[in-house]
Structure formats: C-alpha cells, structure tokens
Length: 577
Figure 1 (cartoon, rainbow, N blue to C red):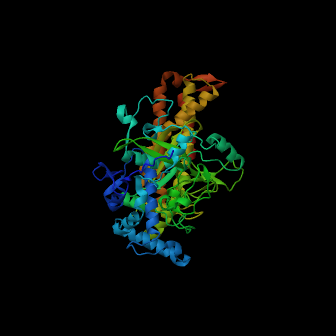
Figure 2 (cartoon, rainbow, N blue to C red; figure 1 turned 90 degrees about the vertical axis):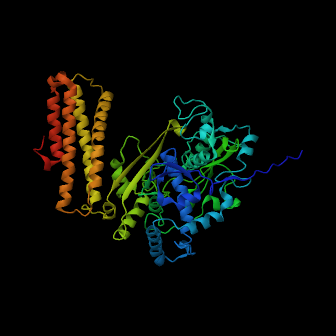
Figure 3 (cartoon, rainbow, N blue to C red; figure 1 turned 180 degrees about the horizontal axis):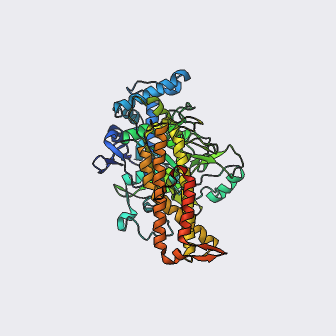
C-alpha cells in the first residue's frame, strides 16, 4: 500500500517568537525573539536561561549569527568579506570593524536582520524538511528499529532525570514536569547539542551501540562521540556591562588573537542537505571557522509536537564529532597536555573542578604555560585591551561554566559557574617571560596561598591529633583537606576584593606595597582561623598528648604554623597579631 504523506505545517519561527530568556536592567526575566535579542542587546544585563550551561550554549548560538554577519559585511551593512582580504589589510580591518561596532553602543539592526531574513526558512522549530538544528528522519529511523520517544522531562536540564530513576526533589512536579512549551524546548534543544551526557543512545540500521562504537574508535585512535562537545571542557567566556558588550568581547575575529581563520564562516543552518551528515556518529575533520564550531551538531534529534504550544518528547541519536586533541579552533577553554596519549604536544580541553574557585585557576587561564595553552578568547581580549586601551573603557570580567557528570559520564550531576573581575590593564600589560608584569605577581601570590592553605591544613590535623583524633592515613588526608578548604573559603572573598582593587598602573614600589597589603590580609586570616580552631578544640587539645615520643598540643601546632607563615611571607615577620 502506498503510504499516505501528511505535510507538516511550519510552526514557531525562532526569528519572531519569544524564546530566548534575558535579564533586564530592573532584574526582570523576559523571553525575546532571535531578532529582538540583537536589536535590544544593549538594554539587557545578560542572558537568563534556566542554568548557566544553557546560557553558554545560547551565547554561542548568538555568536554564530554575529560571525556569519560581520565577517561578510561591515557595520554599515556594506559587503566586505574578511575572508577575501589580504593579510596586510585584514588585521587593520578586523579591529576597525570591531571598534566601530563597540563605538555604536548597539548592534546595527539592518545587517543582522537582513542576514537572518535570508535564512528564515531554516529557523522554523517545526518544518517538513529542515526543522531548526534537527534531523527530520530521526523519528522514522528510530520507530523502524522499535525505539521509543524520550519524554519531555528528560530534555529539561533542570530535572536531569533518568528514565530508570525518579528524582526525589524536582523543580517541577505534576503536569508541568512532563511538559515543555515550544520556547522551553527550543532552549533545551540548544543546551542538549552542547552538553548532552554520553549515556548510550539507541543504535539503528544494524549499527553498533555507542559503547561498542567507542571501543572501535579507540582502537583506531579516535575516542568516539561520548559527551557533546561543551561537556568535554570547562568553558571560559568574557562578560561585559550588558549583553551587547558580552557578545562583542566573545566575538573572536582572530584565532587566538593573532591568526586569521582558514575557512569562511558557515553555520549549521547555512549548510546544504548534501553538506549535512547522513549517518550518526560521524567523525569529521576539525572545523576551521567559528560559526561551524559554535553550531556543531553533537546530537541528531527531533522534537515531537504535543498540543498547539507544547512538545510531548523528542527523538535522539548520537551526532557528529571530531577528535579533541589540539582542536584550537575552540576559543573558550583552557588546554592541558593529554597525559594518556603519550604525545607531549597533544593537548585536550581542561575541565573545571567544582570545588576550586576560579581565582585559583588564574595561572592556567590568564598565563602562558609550557604544559598548557591559554584560551583563545583570553588572548583575543588581551589584544583588544592593548590596541584599544586609550580609546575604550573596557572592564575585564571572565566567567567559567562547567557541567559535572556522573559515572561513565552517563548522567548530569551538577552545573557550576564562577566569575572573576580585575583591571583590564592587568591583562593587557602582560609581557612574555617578564616577571614584573602584574599578572605574574598575582600568579605568585596565588601559589603562596596554596602553600598557606597546606600549612593551615597540617596545623588543623595536628590540633586534631592533640585532641585525640585517629592517626589513620586516610583520615589524616581527610582532615588536612578539610583544613585546606576551610582556609580557602576564608581567603576567597578577600582575595577577589584585593584583585579587583589593583590599579595596573601601580608599578615598582607601589606594586610591592599592594602585594604586601594582600600578604598582611592572608596572614591575618590564617592566624585568626588558627586561634578559632584552638578555641574549638578545647582543653584536651590545649594540654595535648604524647605520640611516638613526640608531644602534640594545639599551642605547639600554632607556633609551628606561625614559623612556616613567616617563612612564606618574610616581609611580615613580627606581625603575629
């Protein structure tokens, strides 16, 4: 029998429908369309999605639009392809164009609207042939292989719920738990393409499961799809005073701030049907343009409509991937040497640790290291501040976002973020191999904080021993770590304040005085914590006990700690208040 075909009426065009969440200046959260988010970007404080990870995924989508637009036309909408310019004129035009946009204080409406209208048909959430960022035949393929529809609650990243395990305290319950509006589904679809876990996706057409496929890929030197691309790294982004500035600061028109992009920008919606992958789990060469990377299709999915305003679920398969080693097209992450590869020059994205404050990673994010690679975004901002320092009032703010996964990366455990602000002159004043630049002095003080917390951790343990605590090695590590984290928690806010108060023009004696100011604060915090610890330990720890022919008591532990702190900060000796 001939199968009856039913045409799907295009519905919910993302250019016009409100679906992107933003925060206004008066702290209200609104939903706006893709067109409006650019027109009024200067009026919004920031994106305001359900999670920080969703905001990052949305930021990258918006950046793809800007890359496609302003790599082809200037601020007046006049055609002038950066890709076609000669090297000697390209760099000048890049910064002239960026500066012209910044000076406007808002995005020119006509060039962006013209670009989006050109691709209007590709921005329908529901479409017969090309639904936005989806694959039309996924449902048919999965149904033919007797696979089931994933429920809406699994797409909702606020729930992060497994099909086999019900969450005890969900942020939604009842009917709302199993339902997503078209706007919500659109946001979470963008998130899923960026941060989806590596739980086994159904295999189709007789193919191997993802676990089997990954084993095969490893033997061939590839690690398989695994997590969606952003899930494999800790994201670093720049933050401005409003959404307009944030977008501009993250618009890396030069790779690593000093290289020209090798390919013309091409976002996923610009690709022809023949350019799109036909099968799941396809290994591709690393894209050499920002728009393609920013809209990379890590998952092949299709939303299933429910009623006139909600979806009832989605269909999903694994998508495209590339090998992460030395994938420096990615500008928003720190890189580290891949210790498992056996190749010293192979680097992979570095993930953020949820229990480490961002300032403790200052060295790897903002300094060149032999065993790492700075984010291209930081290098780009560094160059911006240097070139435009005298004519712009840019503030230096950066944010990290990362998703923490469970066993075998099969579930999402948590999403965390942190931010850091400091004078842009600190970043722009960096000199290679120079030990006088502020950024190197800050790195040195963070290293000393690490030693200080180790010292306090040992003191914390010795006080515990004085009070009769166990000498078991595993318990010793737990107590030392607890002391370290207690000290870090106390240093956290004061260090951020000190960092933010640095005037990058203070050099020489003024720089030394400012460094000494922090050392006094750090030392006093450790001493105050030490006294508090001794009080809490009580009389038993004060009198102490003999252990292996050595007497342990809290006053002795405190004296040892003070000596070590004086060695760490020799300029502060005698200041044991």
